[in-house]
Image 1: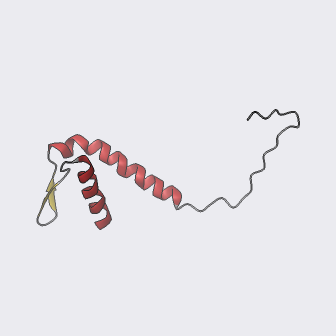
Image 2: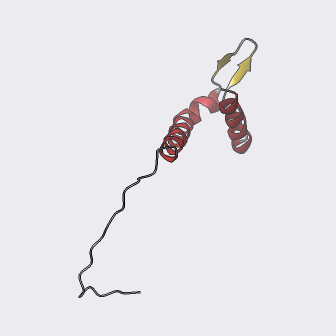
Image 3: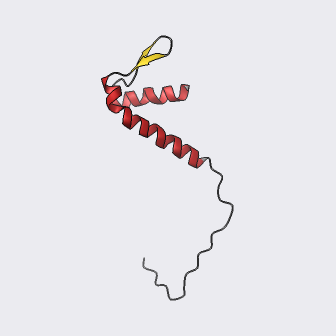
Length: 76
């Protein structure tokens, strides 16, 4: 969770606004900017999580063979 907090703070720096109102005891609320950017922030976090998950997948151990006919014309 500390990494997510750091990422959120960095995103706030980039956007130049507060996305969360932090209060003692880990209670927070969404200010107007937070509500406005919430869909985009959710998408960013979802795509980041998806990318990390995909990158942690084991690589394919098989070989892929592609056949090309002799009369295929290469255009470069």
